[in-house]
Image 1 (cartoon, rainbow, N blue to C red):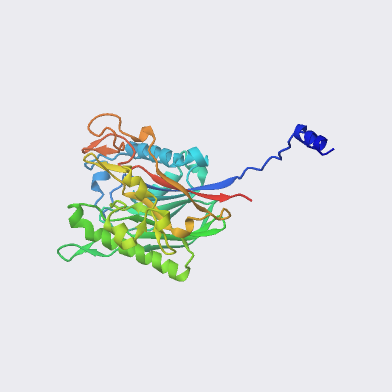
Image 2 (cartoon, rainbow, N blue to C red):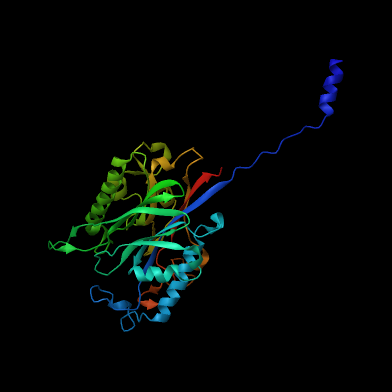
Length: 346
């Protein structure tokens, strides 16, 4: 009898109940240095004369419109292959004023995304600022501030540069802080200009520490063009970022761009050397196995073929607006960078 039962069990079909696949919400956080997105008007308070119709760059309304076309196209496609939509949060630098941001978000194909703008005028001598764009349907900001970086030059005079923009708000129902940076350049040489970026890193660290003092579990993402690579002292010694998750403790910052840089990946090129100045890094609590809250998935440099110069002296470099002093009608001298946040859907 027992053998008959065993035979019967063996010939019965095995029924496997289908498992419901996990589905996830995906949010794209991006940063883009848009290479001098200026309007065509002369601002008497800044050194923007080159970017006017009568200036050295012959910056006409036609060239401005073409720039808006190109930058809006790029932004709309960052991370789209996975998320199927434009980024939810975008940090920008090298924008002249709020009006160029208004023109940008009302330009096709961004107008249907209904982006909001957070922007403050910085004291930068060239008149360039940082800003944050956000989808109104996804992010509700409730705090924003512009933190000034105070520098002096070798003669003891004030060296005016960009502020660091700090924004807090609800990404869906989770509270996040975003910091947008554009640190001092390497003009005059990397070593000579290094103290300015050390000072910028110290300001960034104070901002992060002050947020964590109030809320130890705060989720913070800092992004920008840092004019430093992930292995420079500003990151390794001041911010103490880590490039490996196993090295993280509760107050460390994780920088996914460090591993990419060590593999030779860059966001801009200079004299045939790639740098990864454009970065996003964040608090360790975004490295999480908790699928019910947003956590980091992966980061990347956005570099489709159309963003790459295909011939000439700068072949393989980002296809920029101006190269060697001449107008080439490209996009920017930087590639955008981005990361994905994932959360399991209920």
